[in-house]
Length: 410
Image (cartoon, rainbow, N blue to C red; front, side, top):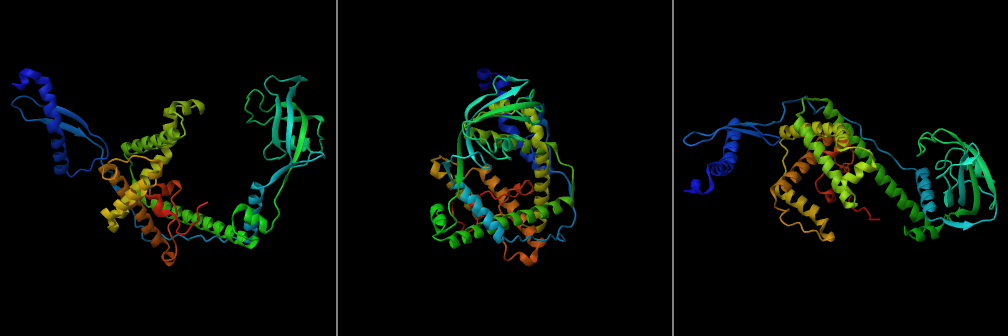
C-alpha cells in the first residue's frame, strides 16, 4: 500500500535512513572501532527479500608510540622584577598621560609637528605623494630613515628639502628603494610634557595615593606578568619534551578537521568585527586555499600534542567528572550573559559537553605532566594561562577558571 503511494525508490531511501545508522553503529561496536571522521558509506545490497550489505570507510585513531615521559625534568624559570623594570614601566605610563604644548623654537627630537609635505623626484613633484596638515612625531623609529634627523633644527614656517632613500617596504613598489627629496613645510611645533614623577601622578592614573604605592603596584603587576610568562615557557618546554618522546603517523582527517576549525574560528572573529571572510581574503591578497595551507603546520602540531596528551591521560587514569564539565559550561556561558546571548539548549547539548570535557582533560593532563617535571615546585605554583601554540591544545574550556586569583581588573 505505502509503496504504491510513494514508490519503491522513496520507500527504499526512507528505510535506509532509518536502518543504516543503527547498523553502522552496531558494526563499529562489533569491530571495536573509534572513528575520527564521518564515514564514507556505500550500500552494496538493499532490496526486497535480500539482507542489507554495506561498506563504511572511516579513519581511526593511529597507533601511538610514546616513550616513558615520567622522567621529564624541566627547570622552572623564575624572573625577578627589579627597580629598572619598574622605572621603565612608569616612564611609559607617564608618556600615556603626557600633554602637548605649542612651543616657539626649532624642531627637536620627540616633537609633534603639523606639516605640509611633497615628494620630489628629478625635480618634479610626484602625483599622489603630497600631504597637507599632516601630523607626525619626530621619532627615528617611526619615520623614514633620515627624515627625523633632517627635521631637527627646522623652524615653524620654514620649508626644507631633505634628501632620502625610500625603504624597500615603501607602499608604492615603484618608488621603493629610490632616491627622492622630501619637501617639508613646518606649520606648528608641539612638545610633549610629561607629568611630574610625584604623588599626583599616582592619583592621576588611579594607581594609589602616593608615588611609593604606584611603584609597588607596578612592581606587583610586572612580577605577576613575569610569573605567568615563566610558567608558559616552562609548560611549553614540558610539552616539547613530551612531543619528542612520541612517534605517530597523523591521519589526514584529523589535520583537515583542525585546519577547518581554525579557519572557522578566524571567520567568527572577523564577523564580530563586521568583516566578511571574502573581504578579508581580498584585503590580505590571499585565497582560502593559501589560508588553509598557512594554518596546516600549527594544525599538525596541535593534533600531535592532543594525541600525546590523550595517551598520557589514558595511561595515568585521568578523567573529568560530570560536575567539572557542568561547572565549566556554566562559567563559560555566564561570560556571555551580559551580552544578552540566548544560549538555548547549549548547556545540555552533547557536542558542547564533549568539547568542554575534552578541553578540561587536556588541561588536567598538562598540569599532571608539569607537576612531574618540577615536583619540588608543584605545591607553590599555579598553572599559567595557555596562550602558546603548544599549550593551546590544553587550554581550559572556561577561561575564568584560569584567571589569577585576586588580580585587579584594569
